[in-house]
Image (cartoon, rainbow, N blue to C red; front, side, top):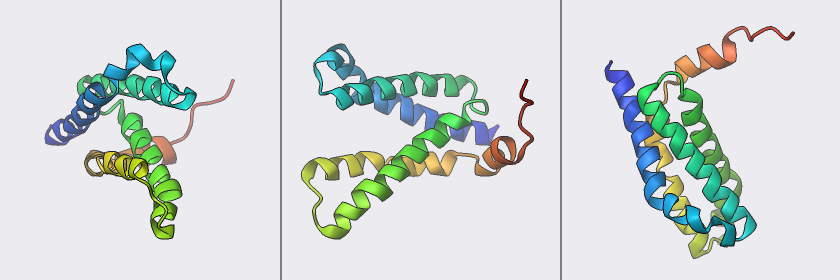
Length: 127
């Protein structure tokens, strides 16, 4: 039960953080540059899934993994090369700070469960 509540804390962090940062931008998403509008919509949808994770923490583990994957990929493939080259600007630095909130998500994700359930388990039959 404790582990599920810790996971709920991760979902709550994601959901509330995105509500505060992305939901206010949603009504004007159509006026944003194309990929900023896409990002606002995608992350708003993620917050809705995170709210469902509060109720069903085990069933929504892939949401935690997706959150971890995209942030780690962005940090490794975009931010790190810029940091090493000394070309990181203020906007990228701000995103690095925002992406650093992935650390608690990584900590609350049940990685052994994810591996056992989604990677090692036999897949469903194709029809």
